[in-house]
Image (cartoon, rainbow, N blue to C red):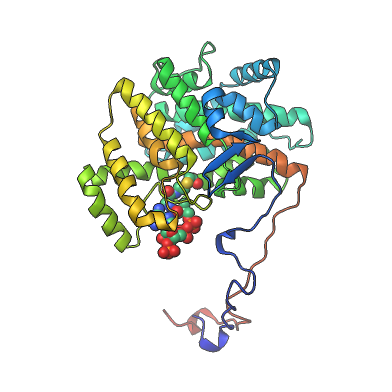
Length: 394
Ligand code: CMC
């Protein structure tokens, strides 16, 4: 126990001494990857509006743009797609390791462990060698989806299935997950979801990636640390909680009372709010359109009416604070319609965000300084050691 005289003075007002909890508004890097205008609700990757990328580009093309800075020429894109296709398989050792994971474990934990294990196979820490960098990018982009799909089958007691070379990136992932070739609309909508989640400036997981990168460790450790950060419910994990919340609300007419109760209890509404946006997240609007496209073709999800009513009701209560739906609000409804289990929503976010993490890894290495912030110590000053029998029980 700390006695009164051992306590040092409480720190001054945090704002006076420069403490910024959550680093809100503190720039820690120059970056040319992604630009957000949170008041206008605009998002651009390398200068290209997200809407245009989501309608015109493919996930692999967007990945190339994010990581290498410019849109690829047709030949560059073809080469990149072929390289990724050639590296989709994972070693039998990784698959065997995954078979030892508990089937009840969360797929994000399985992904973090398996992503880290890639470092055992490929780590040479030759991060200043452009070929090593290119190969690491290709391997991570290619193998992360295979590992997510493999864990899904393994936990059901089945052997993972091999990627199919005749299927493009997103169609192949859905095939490895469901053992059925997806219809083209589902594959295209899934690919567009990956584009939407690929990058979002210095969010928590990307910051984690940059901190890890700043130590000059290998890219597999960079991605594994970011996966761990993405898993939390305040970040990527919110998409799972949105579906749980919509199910709990159950019917559109209950949305209003749910909101009143949650706000009175100071409970966060999952899928709402964002550090950067004061208006509706542009990705949420696109995802809502994608959900509607899927519903028009395959039938509506009854939770969609609950979601729309919740959004409408929330506007009057939270809109004045700038709290609107974020990317996680409608993504779960899209994935659910694609037949994807709820606890794979965040691993799918990771499949996509690995592009952004790797873009930031490269950028960090281009102007590296190890991250080492300071702190304001608030603990006990010098204390006198006590033998065990002198200590009081709490
Ligand atoms: N529901 C109700 N009130 C909210 C919400 C929400 N979802 N988000 C923020 N607020 C309120 C909060 O209570 C606080 O009010 P007051 O000033 O009266 O105390 C004010 O808004 C500021 O909140 P904050 O938590 O300090 O804001 P932040 O910038 O630190 O947090 C956030 C951003 C995304 C963590 C937060 O909005 C949140 O927890 N949202 C729910 C979880 C979620 O959907 N996360 C996904 C984020 S987007 C995708 C991603 O990054 O992975």
